[in-house]
Amino acid sequence: MRRVCLTLPTHRACPDTIRAVAEEAAHGARHFGVEVHLLILDSSEAPVLAEHRQVVAALPRVPGVVVHHLDETAQRAFLRGVITRSGAAEPERMLGLVLPSRVSYGACTDRAFLFAEALGCASVHRRDSDSRYQRLDGEPVFPLHHELTALGRPAAEVAGLVSRSRLDPAYAHRPVALVGGSFVGEMSVDVEEIRRLDPLVYEDVIGLSVPDGYPEIWRRNLIAESFRGAGTAAYTGDLTTLTTVSPTRVDMCNIALAREVYGRVPLPPATDTIGSDYFLLHLVHDARLPGVLHNRHIVNFHTGERRSDSGFLAYQLRFAKFLLAAPHLHSVYAGTTAAGESLLDTGGGLRAAAVADLVRESTLLDPSENAERLDVVDRSYRKLGGRYAEAADFLAARRERLIDEVREDMAEFALLIDAWEPLVHEAAAKGVA
Image 1 (cartoon, rainbow, N blue to C red):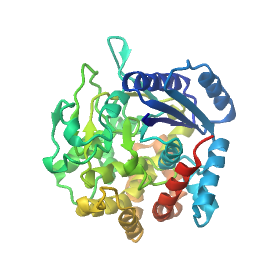
Image 2: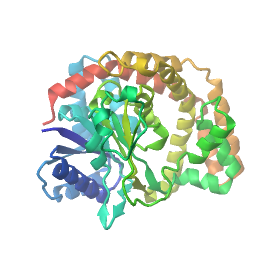
Image 3: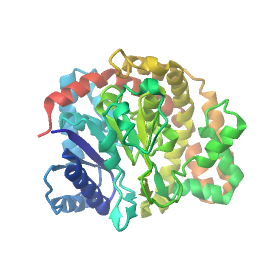
Image 4: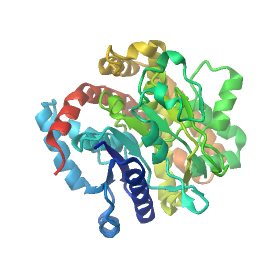
């Protein structure tokens, strides 16, 4: 029986989301005859962790659904064993990359990839703790339905199952490597406030995320669409497109990847950096691997913590590191765009060594560009005043450290790519007790 991994990484209270994702797992098992492994990777504090354990214990048992709720102690034990047996150099450093003490959007998903290998799964389907499903006629609309319909099947077969195809026929023999949708509802709470306070400041700051050299009309378009997902339109029926999926059209709370992708290349383990977990979406697109874009968008919302002063500062740090990581990532993406199909080996798999080389090259960029980026953020935030001026002070006190950190993040990502294939192999060999 085909096994798939529906994963929910979390570090905060989300009992309703756990119940909702469990319903999605049951839908997959009932309608597709697959074995769905619901993998909850829980980094929450003890009281929240205890609440989550009660929620998981109370979930109804469903044939074809296997639930794994793992705290960081259990995750660490598994990962340490895999890393040790893989023969990786500096095993404790490697453990710190896949299970860091700080928030890492890439590392939590990398752990899901390794657990999925141990569980014998063919794909990973990721959701986030701050999301809900849309509903139609009172019933939840599950993205898993489209993911299980298309993922891993030859694009030529999937062409007859989607609303429309925009895929180059030259790629029709390749299997679908990615299925994804976006989110509807609230845009990023802190960025939205900047836009509301001063649209020109918003344009200056968000403009730092756009690669250099874009024509002005494209640049403005990207700024206007950033952080907005699919808007606010309600779901009224399915619209699916077979295509090479643009990374700007999907969100990591609503994504599924075939193991042929994540089994070759991991995500950047950068800490406190939003957007770092979109790396594989760029690789899939640039390598011309087929995907399906759907409109079963997830409803985004923000927890109370995100609206608190401490939550605000934590997000501003992650946002600043995203802007500082952008030149490094854009350098890699320019290389993957130029490489195109040559990113694939003769078997159609991603060439990890080629990707690692591009990541390493990006560490050689002149740091003065990032110094200028921090200057733009500093000026912009001080113009906004209030808590943004406080955020400017917070970032200014960490200025040199942040610039150094993003370069080190890329260097460590290259190390993880080098070590990834043996880690994947050992995870598959170990299994999960």
